[in-house]
Amino acid sequence: MPAIETIPRASGILPLLGHIAPLARDPLAFVSNLHNYGPVARIRMGTKHVVVVNDPALIRSVLLDDRTFDKGGPLFERGREALGNGLITCPHSDHRRARRLSQPAFQPRRMADYAAVMSEQADKVTRSWHDGQILDITSEMMALTVEVTLQTLFTNSLPRATASQITDDFLTLMTGFFRRMISPPLLNQVPSTGNRAYARAIRRLRETVGDIIAARRAEGSDHGDLLSALCSATDPDSMTGRTSTELVDEVLTFLLAGTETTAGTLSWAMHLLSQNPAVESRIYQEVESTRHGSRLDFTHLPALETTGNAVKETLRLYPAVWMLTRVTTSDTDLGGYLLPKDTIVAFSPYQIHRRSDLYDQADQFDPDRWRDSPPAQETYIPFSAGPRKCMGDRFALTQATLVLATVVSRWQLLPVTDKALQPSVKASLTPRGLHLRVAARSSQP
Ligand code: HEM
Image (cartoon, helix red, strand yellow):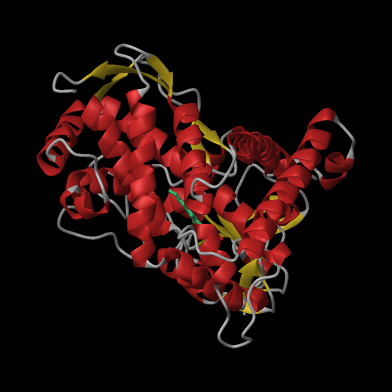
């Protein structure tokens, strides 16, 4: 079988650095171009080979075989520093038990309660805006999704000061996370102000969450929230639940996995609606004819079809997780090439979603493309696929749909500049410096 060195290599390589320069300069353009090399392409990050998979069927085969293609690569190594052995970062050998222990927290019957929190928070935030106000949308959405995650995890049990300390520490962690992901490991050891703040935030977050869990366990009652579901779950094989450290890992995993991703998606959606007033207006009509003046809840979701399709389409154009990696755990065949054990394998949902050979008018925002045809398994992968598929996909889609619908029911979204909006490409894909003006709907109470 042909060796890894025979996989077509992307141009633009530099000694020692490999492809780090084009990847750092314009990562989206760089990964978008790689499919021109064939079903698989080879890049180099420093001295390490990375095999980038461009063929949707091959990507699926990688994702379905999580034993051979296990979690690994720089994103996961940095993730483990903060999240320990949580569901996102744990290896295949620990995953089955961890996933089973989290399953009860995402049962459909719990989703209605989470949806109530999402709507309430959306209502509160959108009511605080003023007619004509220019908003920093990404910050607004980040504050909203952090609050929703805290409320669904801990209901109303957190004192205000504890909640705001968790939020502050969490934002410090998010800021440091990507910087540390792309920095050489030695730089991450230097006692700089940033590194010290990052270490302090992780330490304090873990302590605070650990104290909350200890108090909850001592109390023993079910609050009907995510934390209660995580605390009370027992693995049927081993008849054991999670240890306190495992619970802290999991709570931080939900905070990290669910907030910036959903906030980024909502921000892109609001940007796209500000550019597409006809779609925005249809969503407004849809929401008004669905809610009849009441606050939106879980039961309204099936009727919010255009809103839901706008969210799906946003996740196609701007998948928050734009690049994913795995590591081979044994010598293996991929697309007819022999990959040695410990090879990093990567793929980009962004590249797949924007390919003109896979989508008509791939760069166009067209929520109606989903009206009669649900997304295809192989070519629509914002939540990945297989055993490691996002566990919060329903949670995220519910939140994004309810928040977007609530925003549009109150406010018309207007651009404040005609300059093209640039993505900020970090661990997740968010719009850089998105500001929008909000104009009150005439029917607003
Ligand atoms: C728009 C929002 C979101 C996007 C685009 C997204 C995307 C993803 C992706 C692509 C993965 C797979 C990572 C991989 O294969 O390596 C993932 C995993 C995961 N996500 Fe999400 N996510 C979102 C929101 C959420 C939310 C709200 C939660 C929790 C409340 C969540 C919890 C998780 C967990 C626990 C995993 C790990 C699953 C496992 O390995 O078994 N995500 N997410």
